[in-house]
Length: 307
Image (cartoon, rainbow, N blue to C red; front, side, top):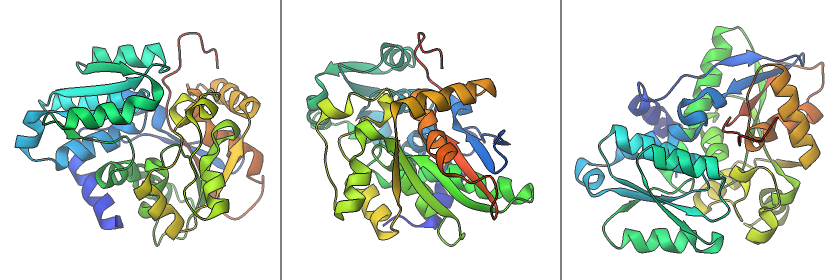
């Protein structure tokens, strides 16, 4: 199981490779924003990618790594691999956003495009050729890396004299949410996972008490392409269920509204990056004990997305 010490160790390993992103106030009187859209590669995924690669020995890095990704993790792994001198292959689903696939290629990775349902199997087949698999979320080092954003929230809020009551984070595969949950252990801060109504497998899993999987044709309906996973990963689920982390859903209209609200602040968020903000705007009361923080998880919008 992942521990808070593991997250602290990951923070040490990735220091100098990733950005310490800003924690800023919003027009809402109690809501602050952790701007992971300003992270290297435009999303929090850089944290997990560098945490995983810096944990590998040089021989494994020399053989190369492989992953499957709808975009942001693939780009993050590609850039981390290039910086650390490691060949990278990224398997992407055929419904991936073209601008994200282009960014993966531009970072120097080999891209393999497959039907959505085949991406995990193709990545597994490439592992058989000697590559090391770095999953997008179901991996302890990746989870630890994602949790470093929460460590920054705790440090930054303390420096600002703020008491954080609750953190909101999006949930797709669960790497960010589970890493955040571990990082917040003992801090007395509540945590909520937010996901689209059209990809609500985590909320359904919480209600059922076990992991529930959705069909990829259903999750593909949401505009939040980074959260279209059919289910939360096994290891993230173990950590989240052990801590009883609740989940809420938001509509496509709420996601779009949150994008526009962020845009008015000058914050560039892709749909996935606005999901936690959409949930917080609906739920956070204007008056209460302490502030609440929503993680703006990514800003890699499509060229035609005017959010």
